[in-house]
Length: 458
Ligand SMILES: Cc1cc2nc3c(=O)[nH]c(=O)nc-3n(C[C@H](O)[C@H](O)[C@H](O)COP(=O)(O)OP(=O)(O)OC[C@H]3O[C@@H](n4cnc5c(N)ncnc54)[C@H](O)[C@@H]3O)c2cc1C
Ligand SMILES: CC(C)=CCC/C(C)=C/CC/C(C)=C/CSC[C@H](N)C(=O)O
Image 1 (cartoon, rainbow, N blue to C red):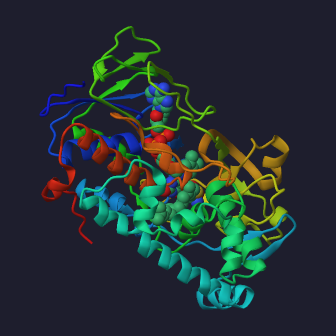
Image 2: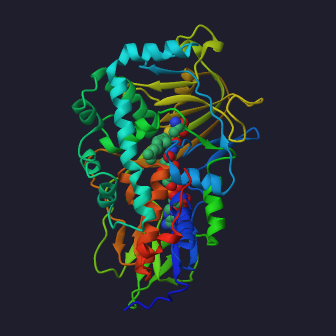
């Protein structure tokens, strides 16, 4: 039988990205516990929220954009006094490998008209679809404020809307077709948005596809100074102790507590609860789970996304622009066989878009590293390149069912939520769910703690 100090339980969190740090924050601020939390991470705080420095300016290379209805991230930014970075919606175009099937010009009214002309009612239908989906999605905030938590992802999605689980069983293409959306919209716009956001296609399931389409709406934002300021601020606010340490194994002790074994440290501290805040598929992390009554399986794999940051000039001839000044800011691709997914102008995190004298920096997303030849096709001149290999988000091929948050009483996994959709806000929702589960395991009546819940100002 496990004996837990009801006032100061010891909790270990593995991973210091947005999942791990927000779990620490929720545990220490909203559960009524006064936990002693250790956060272990083999990489710096922030994880997949990261920047690269190019000539004295930082640029986002991982989690970049937030949706205006991502309430937790918004609330964190407000609570920590962080400013939003002002974006500009540059012109975008859809490139099929030989030319643009659609490209924006200088007049916004004409752009709307020509989008409508090309995609007709499909544009309006998808707009409504995403609006409806977001309305249902937002129900999770009240559910969590009321102290409800779920031991698996399917139940959490059902709490938003019972039909969300059906969206995991059909592809985005099938879902859109069922709604009467045209093949042209699916093949071009929806496909291009899936390629830029998840490096995948409309063959991905409809839930992540809808999140991806939401990620192409207007009003998207990011944090001035870099998104990774949030995990750092959450870590500080939670007063958790950060240890740069790789965890090799989690051992279930005979008293029901857990011990951790590290790669480069002989200590084996023990805890009342352990939270995994990192992907745990075979291709991402490998943990030993020792002495548990059953074996854990983490099916699926993560998509390789290569983020190539280039300081240089785009080759206007490749894209058929008259000259360098006609180049548009966002080039999305529709062709599944093309060697790159997107090419977009990027601005430093410390400046509003278009402000000041920033170097000309472009972000290219591709599924494979770009060859010298490919880089020379895209750019007429290159001063510097920085290449980041990400195990970015799951492969959403529809064959993997979503998994469990609760692996064993006292042992939880936040990133199970990524198989529904990987996004910063999803991680925070998963983290709050797991914080509630852990608090309940540690003896807190979580629904009774409504008064301490995390209230969002709208
Ligand atoms: C290129 C790219 C672009 C993206 N763009 C967006 C976007 O625009 N908007 C959006 O909302 N989302 C975006 N995402 C997704 C978003 O960044 C992630 O969903 C989110 O940051 C995941 O956070 P996390 O804390 O769950 O995981 P991570 O940030 O990956 O953190 C896990 C941490 O655990 C550590 N770890 C792993 N194994 C061990 C171990 N054995 N011992 C100790 N530590 C360990 C790792 O070092 C890592 O730092 C993007 C992701 C990528 C890669
Ligand atoms: C979770 C909800 C309801 C909405 C999130 C919508 C959103 C912001 C989706 C984007 C997800 C994602 C993985 C984007 C990656 S690419 C981002 C950007 N274009 C870049 O250049 O880095």
